[in-house]
Length: 284
Image 1 (cartoon, rainbow, N blue to C red):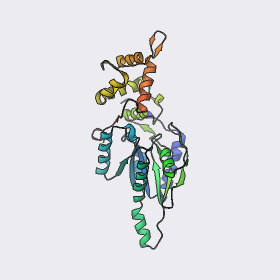
Image 2: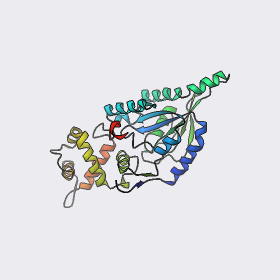
Image 3: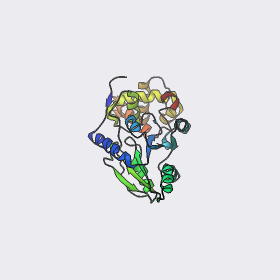
């Protein structure tokens, strides 16, 4: 649909090469996917590049996603031979669960070391994922300190660093890397809606219309309740009603652009409700 969307800053190419070089010294890959868009938030290049390693899929931002849809995704990954768990990275129990599952990735290596009379070495795990999916937050929670800087905008982490969690576990943080382009425009739209690429890569009116069509189909009640809507007829009328109800005015009438931005920001931040943009049965 339409032309490809390109988003590939120079530091991402460099990081891609660094990940390739470090793969030989890691035991497993912890792949972070946004629970709201597991399909769109997977970097296919990184997935193929790291396919030879044991993998733990972590669906982050589960607190913002539809719980029933997240469970469907967990089943999907397990049925396709991938360990998968979901996590709210602000929940200490979920962080402990990630550590336990990641440590299990080193079981085969430890068995070989013990048979050779060696002391089991730390499990070395590489964390990969697209920008703004929670990599730095996870590192900080696991290490229980400000080991990796966190900033709520895509493309913040620019270099790699080893984090020693304990004598049993070490993590390699990597910058978030998107694909160089997206032939499927829907993927780019989904990434923009959850904040993994800058929203201004696509026009706000296009994003808002796409989001309204989706919400009307899957989360109608949440949409009506949040914005006190009287009808869900045409999108431009919905935006007018949002502007009117929220007092978004400009000279000459309602400020529809502000209504679009409000809608997009409140969806991204989970204010409208727990919503998942992708279903495993229709995307994979």
